[in-house]
Image (tube, rainbow, N blue to C red; front, side, top):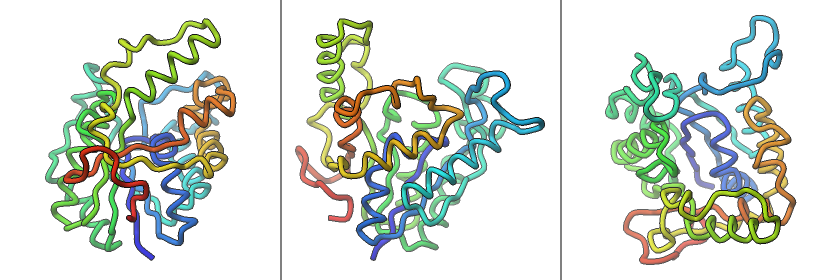
Length: 259
């Protein structure tokens, strides 16, 4: 048995990005630890969604624990930073935001968990945070440095196959004739296929992944893109989880994070 530590920016990121590999690791007998940088304070909910006196972050923490239970995580930790909001908003510069946190400080917090768990595998994000969110970019910086500090041997940068996503959107447009993003709109999302070194087939774990998304009801509604997709389209969009491991490649050389 080994330990996977999976590091994310906000509640709900874990199930969208790594829910399949989390559940797979659990079912393969490994220990799974979820670490989240912020409590997602800048999410949005409709009026009346929260209970009297309930703060959004409290609901999102509870949802994270529920999703973690579904995905097989045995430990959940929050680093204690505030959600930095989207790039270019005033929340980026709020004291205590993850974006303003010194990388060395945050990395040492994560490294302490990696050492305590004797983690063999760490996931973070690619250097653009998949789509440019400041907290996601910071997850990359902090995760990579924490792995250096702790000596974690296998580090995988979660990403999206840009061409795979573009092909899926084009197919959806052809089938439905609906208003969907153009390939040009997605030109900065994820990474080119040529840069990706690991592709994990998580089709068998999609029921858990979808159930974990539903656990994040404050952010992922039944009408959302994630949950409204037909089963076939959901499997195309979320049935493979993509990663970059520095030093691997060229091309996809791994199909399991534990080798």
